[in-house]
Amino acid sequence: MKDSRIQDQPRPRVTLVSTNQAYWLYEGVAYLDAMLTGEGDLPMPVRCLVFKDWQSMQRHLGEEISITRFWGINPGVVARLRDADQLEEIYPDQC
Image (cartoon, rainbow, N blue to C red; front, side, top):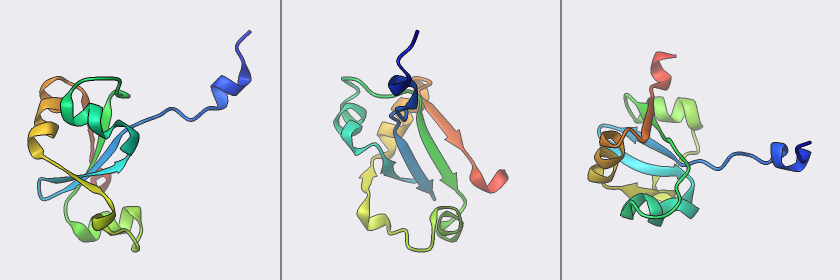
């Protein structure tokens, strides 16, 4: 029998947000080094919420969102994740 405490634990994840081909780490700062270097444990897939513009991002994530609170992620890192099929791109505007 599985321990119910294990099932109740939220699954760790890394989430990026993007608009105009710029990327920021929205969730999962504990995994930042692993994502940047491509070494170490990283929950897969990395999710990327792709928004058509800043206003759309605010509608979905809240008016109080400030990108200055998040780490900027080099597009080359995102391309590496995409090429390795480790990136799940989600388009909230199309849902």
